[in-house]
Image (cartoon, rainbow, N blue to C red; front, side, top):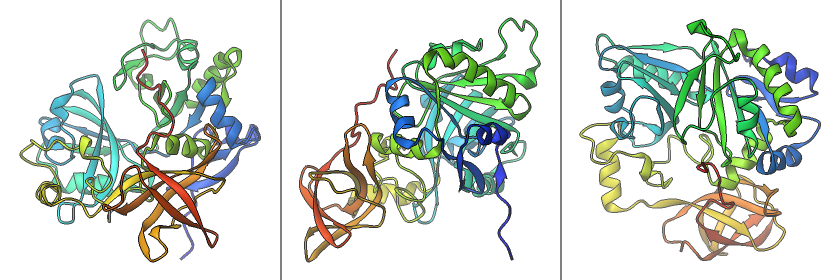
Length: 377
């Protein structure tokens, strides 16, 4: 059977008009880069402001009496640490294996309404698991194609978002809902935009979750508001180099069903004191015994550029593991990587990476590779 035709963002024609190159991500055809190129798009976000269309991300609404309590008994992080108007990073873990099914963001509107944003390729699997586990009265509604997600990221993000009449300045990991057209005193509830102080770049910024029907007009308004500030459309190529510089894991590479939160060093996203969540017993036992592997950062001491699946060695005869994400860092001007290695490796030692048949020396480090500014007021 032929592969299904990839889905397209409601903004596909806007990207085509800008000359975007496209690639498939999780069943969606999304902009990889624009004629400006990945490095310039990356630099624009670090030094000014960029805008990403990440509408391929999943959107699941969990609602009904007990919605928060239900989610808190399934996802790893503790929703009781936050409250209405706040967002939280969490994990969906397989109960039997402890492996990471997906990493998600939860947006806690109230005790009976939470938005869960999975990765595009895992949206259906996360939905299935939640539906099968949901108690009577709690429903899981898939809005994957009903909303767009636009990420405005960089030091000038506030000016751009405020330029279309949306609220800015709220704290990191909080969100507000508002009409995007300034002066709209009686907005249609279905046209409200969720303005989230979140992102995947390490820079100050906002993710705007908006109904697909208003997406083209909102995109045009943001582009116009951003012109005086040098706003640059950025593709998922730059998003990948930006997140790698921060050490943010990518599902399917750095984390996945064969990798546990302990191995990925994501224990901070686990509510260890909660009485129940998927994978709890497995993860507690592994934590007590010590994980066999750990995700580390690597920085090239020379000019080598690492790529996924390259072997990492302590010596020619001792294979430690492999690179999970590797790239050239436009900010540091050198090769960087995330690698899943045996826990015997020192966090500040040296290793060699098999780069095209050569053993290239890399320094082991703890990400981020670049100092983030995402929490700046």
